[in-house]
Amino acid sequence: MALLCIGSRGPEVVTVQRELNRQLFPRPNLDEDGIFGPLTAAAVRAFQRQAGIDIDGIVGPQTRAALGIAEPGNAFTHRVRLHFRSISLTDVPFESILSATQLVYAQYGIKIEFGSGMSLMLSPAEAAQLEQLDGQCTWSITGGEFANLQQRGGSVPANEIVVFFVNRFSQAINGCGGHMTNRPACIVAKAGTKFCTAHEVCHVLLTSAFSPVHITDTTNLMHPVDIQRTATPKLTPAQVTQIKASPMCVSI
Ligand SMILES: [Zn+2]
Image 1 (tube, protein in one colour):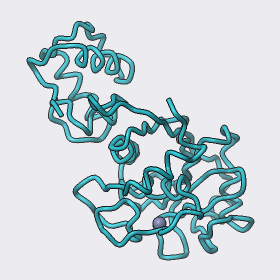
Image 2 (cartoon, protein in one colour):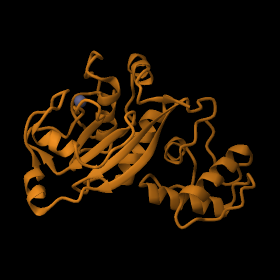
Image 3 (tube, protein in one colour):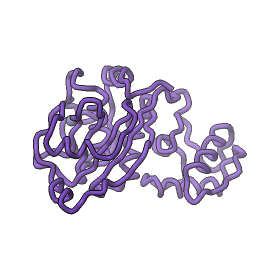
Image 4 (cartoon, helix red, strand yellow):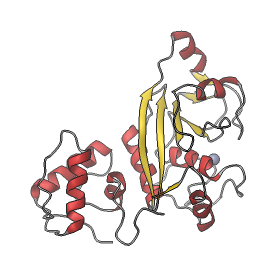
């Protein structure tokens, strides 16, 4: 895969410039001329800072994924839209979580789209109750504090996923992909790694029907423990096939 950097020219550079003009704030107002010069490089660095990814002014896989630009020869074929609802700021910056999630799925032509984000306005009593999420993470959430949480945050389209960020669970877990019927959702604790959200979203996409639920290979996204990673975790072909068959993974 070609990296784009100062001196690069062509239609791919136009795409990068167009997305920077759309997604970087304040808007850089780059000429969309297909010539990667110092102004484009500066805008790339500013975008990388905004996205919480490595700042080098070069457009590689991580920056492409964060910008939502497909790799040449590996165009996005699907998209998954996520809505974020939080009662806690995450330890890892939110931008890094979104970028990491995009990077995992971009490897397989799946674009992760930011649908919406908001913090849940809890009363002091509600905040005290949900400070620690008590109960068991199960595939099917029917009651208790998990359901209490997942009923919040407004309606979203039935084929889009709500990601809830909470302080902690009473169980020794960083996330839970279980949810209520007709409310595709998962929950991530503030201590989760930047790939924890991608893992829990994967549970939602794979559903309880998919086996194995977890994979001991530490390079796989579905390793059972939320370990610190340096490389972007992978999916098996079977996992990718099942994900792309999910109604929440829409062909584009
Ligand atoms: Zn898991």
